[in-house]
Length: 369
Image (cartoon, rainbow, N blue to C red; front, side, top):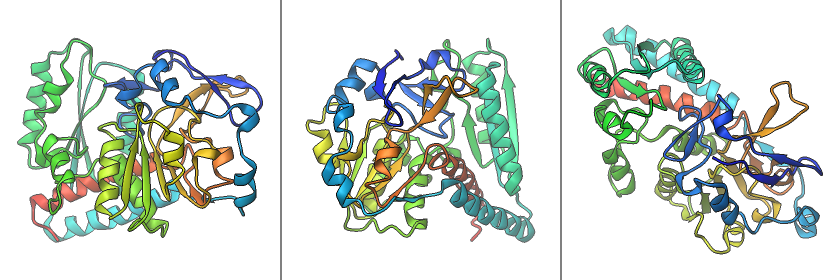
C-alpha cells in the first residue's frame, strides 16, 4: 500500500500514513490490513491510496474541520466505550463457563492455530492467542511449519485438526507465504470449527432471515456486543457502516439489520458519503483510512464504533509511529454521544469473541447447555 498524506486532526501539522510493507506489525490479506483479524484496517475496496483518497474526497480542509453548528450542538464530551473493560468482563464469563463444562462433562474447549514461516509479527499474534486461551482455561494447540512448507502439508494438519475431538476451533495464521493459495487452504477448515466465521455458509446464513450461522465473524460480533453492553439501543435506529469488506463491513451491516436497524453501507463508489453518514444514529467505521470520518460526518448525539487502527508516523513516539482510527477522535468526541477509542476499543473485543466462538463450538459438539 502506498503512503498517503492526510490531515492529522490532533495538530496543525500533517502526518504520513506508514507504508504497511515497512511496518512489521501489520500485514494484508485481500487488501485488508489485519492484526491477524483482531482489527481491520483496509477493506479490499480501498486497495490503493488513490481510491481511498477518492472515497475521502469530501474531507474538510483544516480551516473547516469542525463546523460552528456541531460545536454548539454538542453539549458534552462523548462517553468513551471502554473495549478493554468490556472484553475483560466477557473473558471472565467465558472462564466460568469453561470451568463449568469441565466439571460437568470433563471437556475443555480447544483452539488450534497453524503458523507457516517465521514472521515475528505472526509469532507475536500466536503467542497472544495462547495467553488469551490460558487466561480462560481453553486448551491451545499449535503447529509451526517452515516458510517453504507446501500447501499439502498445511492441509494435512488442518484435516487432522478437523478430525480431532479435542479441537473445537481452527485458525490458520495469516498471511501465508506467497506460494500458497490462501482460499484453497482456508476452505479445508471444517465449518463446525471455523471460529473466524468466514465460511461462505456462515456468511450466507447470516444474510438470511430465520437462519443462524454457526459462528459470527469476531470483529463485527464484538462491535454489536459493545453496543449491547453499553446500553445502546439498535432497534429502529439508522445505522451506517463505512466500508464493505467481507471481514467487517458486510457482516457488520448484516448484524445491524438483524438487530432491526435501518442500514446503509458507505463505500468507495458512494456519492455524498459525508451527507449519508451524517444521517446515522450509529456509525461503524471500518475503512482503513486514518481520521477519515470527521465531525461534520457525524450527527450530534450519534454513537461511533471505530474499527480502524492505522499506524501513522510520529517522531515524538519511541516507536516512530502512533495508532489512529478511521474516525478523527478529537473532533468526534465533541459531537457523538458515545465513541470507542483507538486503541482500546474494538480490538480487545475481537479476541474475546474468538474465545467465545471456541466455547460455543465446544458446547455445540457435546450438546452442552
